[in-house]
Length: 190
Image 1 (cartoon, rainbow, N blue to C red):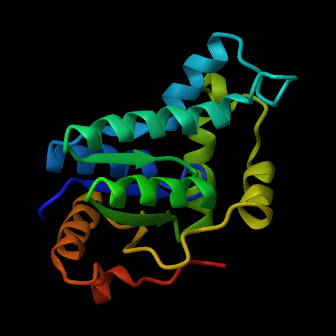
Image 2: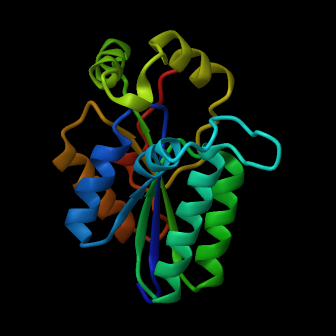
């Protein structure tokens, strides 16, 4: 690899994105920038959840902060990992920022193939302040109605697999010419 690497990890809520991002960050000694902690700070500061007049909603500002962090890393010719439920517009912007800096953009789409385990993971997280009032039904509705996964990810991560297996799979995919390995082509549940 000649330039910096941006790894984007996306997927539905509670699908294992943060766990994988942190494991890859440790493996590659690269910072992992998650949107959730950024949004928690913005929420605590009183920024509204939804656009209010000239004030943008904090999820949008969270994406903007991730973009700023990524841009700074790339200016220093350093790699970064971004993790969140990412809309297609942010994926496009981050891909452009990375390639303009001479870097490689690598996408990982997380999913949990066991729906009962996915729900259990979400419900274990319910106690955190930013999850109160946001139930499993809304997560499922959001996944089905609004979330659009990466159409052709470089690595498809079924987080029912052990994290060590996923890290090794990502490393293998990063070493391939086109980013694809047969073991990374798992089938997402519908």
